[in-house]
Image (cartoon, rainbow, N blue to C red; front, side):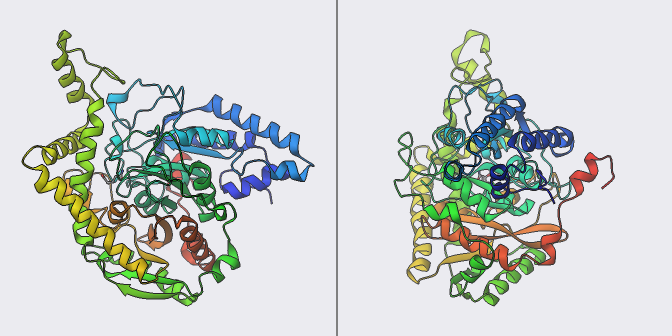
Length: 514
Ligand code: GLN
């Protein structure tokens, strides 16, 4: 049976390119055709690079052809060579538009590559284009994009999660094996959970933020989306590591294990003897029973595979959300001050009056959620309130980190928890109530506050929609977390829910026929 280019993982493509079974050009063409055919229904993309991507695919094929027959030469080629990938539209890629989902950046063309974009190019990945997102990554549903409304391939009346909703939907819909997201409070893990894929927020500092449009600089992390843990590991390896352009990127070495993550029996066996902490505060009030059931079933299967599970308490969990909504808007208000109509993108002239020009550009360029965050952040940082809100929030942040430290000191390998208290909701359900939207991130925000790595992995279905389980680990434990994720894939490989795929998109794109 030949490889279906749409369904193939990055690992499978890499093998097939090397054996000559398929070419990067054929794969890229198939994906671009599918994207163009389905975009009217999925709305995941803001910019496609058809010609550039086909050129990159041909260049990759030329390298495979030159190396074929020479085992050493083939082995020396980078693992992502010729593998298609999507970038969230806040990653600068020289010569392409970068909007960050905002009208205020309409018309802006990136003059340089973000470090991760340069690393992906150097790895020979084929960059298909840029994906839709909530404006400046603020949101949990992608409905705050100024451009389009991305649907969930499992049910086109529902949101794909956010803010990296376009990147998650594209991978879930088999339009790309890999994509890039960013996670400030959950924007990789939550959409991964809601679309049934793997999404990882690495340790703060693991991946360079140079050239990534900033939201909240002490929380933002770039990370991978994929359909398997092994693929996510390959992508993390390609983008991670110290970058002299980003002083917060860490010199901590990238583990070579990311390139050879165990799968199948080896991964399943490695679960034996692992100790997992189950934090009781993560089973929050308002969690859907179907979600809780699927997560608890995942915990039971880890136990059946030889792991031990102990309930723990992370008492500051309940304060994480409130703390985040001081820290993140405060940092955002500072980061977004640069959009003044002079330096970037859209500009309104204000009749030649400088102040009027700022006011009009910012008043018209920013959408409602971004304006709300700027006002919250400016208020929290203003004289008289700074100590009461911002300083207090930073202190609580330390307490949140200490809660996690106690878990690691007790010897646990990882925390297992739900990613999202709910499955994907219907469009509009939370648009008139910002706080209900904020609550969607109650389980993901603590890891950002503490700078810890977290990964969401598919663990079942509720009401026919995907549920994600979250693994949170100690700093720099990404390869361990993804190894556990791979083990979970192995022990649930034959579970019935794994055989269910999203079909809503294909049905709609084929005019109603499956
Ligand atoms: N939903 C959260 C927010 O709106 C987190 C977003 C993110 O991680 N970028 O801020």
